Length: 316
Image (tube, rainbow, N blue to C red):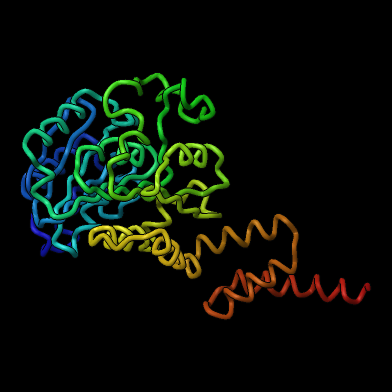
């Protein structure tokens, strides 16, 4: 399916359909866009064959169906306006892409010289999919990796500190395409975005070494980081910069300035300020937001904080 079609026409199906029906319609659309191919029972791939820039996205059915209003892979939205190609590698469950069918598929792409057909290749994923974006990036020359809150591995011998994914820890993280920090050693650039307040994410990120690895701290986002970046348009901006080899660590922080007007992020900051009970911090934050946006909640918080400060001044 070509990118000049409307967004509604590219939508796989309604939210109230089953995963099986959604996959069936995704297969039909995938064949129109390029091809759709099952990779064993737990994964599939959709290739959108358009231009000589390739965005490889690792995604899950759960994330797509929970987060996309159009019920479409994020890669479709990220490439729709650019005329790029997109290879969406889709996990049907929390598999961490640890599957011989996935390994075999990437082996085939290498043998066919698939990635050499493109002028630029960017790998993107978040969380489990961020791990996969890093781990499988070894297949493409001069690749740029953008990984949001990725795991380096869940091998208990190396990641005993991370107890968040008990089922995944039973998978084999020691065979092929396994330890993500090793797999990105030949990448051109690797950008890791994470909230340093999440200890496990920070420890995983610290396992990635090298001058080509760029750690980008995204404070106060918590577990909503990937969805927030997408909703703010930051993901799109980073990928567009990466596609022209123009992405830098400083560029990531410039793009993150979008948080200054992103209401969910600002509300989270306000809630934390109120929990700490600091009227000065609340006043600074609420005044800044209320002066630039119609924000009743922040205006009310500002008035409350100012009354507290006034009362304190009177008492002194």
